[in-house]
Length: 292
Length: 279
Image 1 (cartoon, chains in turn yellow, red):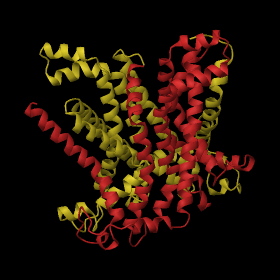
Image 2 (image 1 turned 60 degrees about the vertical axis):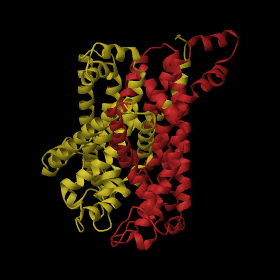
Image 3 (image 1 turned 120 degrees about the vertical axis):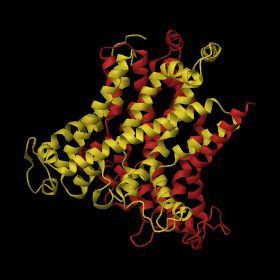
Image 4 (image 1 turned 180 degrees about the horizontal axis):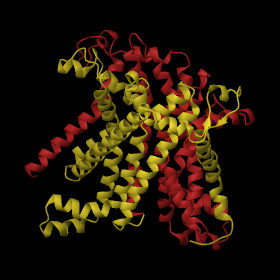
């Protein structure tokens, strides 16, 4: 590593320009919009935007739908994260204990599920669970049951698709991590008579902690802001908006209802929650002595 | 071989089959004749495979155009994002400068920002830019390319950093002593050595751009010939009866390029993810 005048600045410039224009500036704008009365009339320039301070936020917090959507978002995301991590980590460990061909088969299957675009995956699962023509209903003899009518079964189905799409990343990352652990360490544990369970918690987990951090944070970020699956599978938020999550709701408020200021306020709330969750997680990591 | 292992093998195969089943079902439904698709007896095989559904899909207005648009956006994003990330990664690993750590942390934080929340300001930004910069406004592919380049950059930089760091310092220092210019060092020495890492990061940028539904839906509002693939798919959803055969055929067509991309960089991808461990 060397110190050399302006060279690093030139090298960073392209990334900085792109990120500044399409990341930092929009974030500032989002905050600004959230304190304005900004609707269709203001968009078309017919009326000037009016500063309303915390007005949009007050309106949000006073809205019972906000609390219900917030609640649903957090529970849905948490359930998806836990399920994704459990399935992904479990299968990563499984991969280390099986023969070559099953291992290749499982990793290829996971890669394939990972590669399927969110829109495609959503449509296939919709077809599998279709009321009359779906394989699931026909097999289980539930013909006529619409999984999307009930709030919980609709969320469960979307959640299943989300986990199906995202467990491969967790599985393959953790498997690559486990494979990178020196054999001698695991052999020493085996000689000392450590059980598989103990080896996992006492040796693999601590070594893999930085990687686990990446996987957990990515899962939180992905699952908290699932958009495509919900939008496509529940047709924009489910019956009477029963399957709305924060970002789908923000989108609907802004682009369907023309309430851009309110939509921006929802966006800010979402951003704040995600930052808090991630920072809390990073802090617990730091406390456990992890240099991140 | 212990019996326990055989049991685990069987379990793994079972999981693999369950994981792949929806994909099988998608392809199967795409080649089933309409009579079988609409049957109240869905069989896990077909007696008369046909490419009829694919024909319906590719003859829909502009489908080829949608496909081309998606490919174009994804490829440009892979190149732009890879290029910017490569330069930034070199800056962050090869040079010591003020605020280096701050810049690194900022990139990490940028990864946590829910980009979906930025849809609204980006919509206005793109709309306003369109009036000034040709090729970037609403209803342009340029706006999609730029947005996805930005969103894939932080992750790409973090991932590439490890790969650049893995190239010994002595190598480019020696080249410098031999009189190689900065440009030569960058493109003739570092770039080829980091190429495998770029392959791994490109998977992520490709998928992000290819999968995008939200921004295409938001930015491309009226120019139908600038739409990308996910929108083409929705054409076959009807209020009365969905054309499942066509939906599955279009979904399959949308999946194939990503699968190919994945298989091409499979080994590099695993190595790349593993490399992040040691970093």
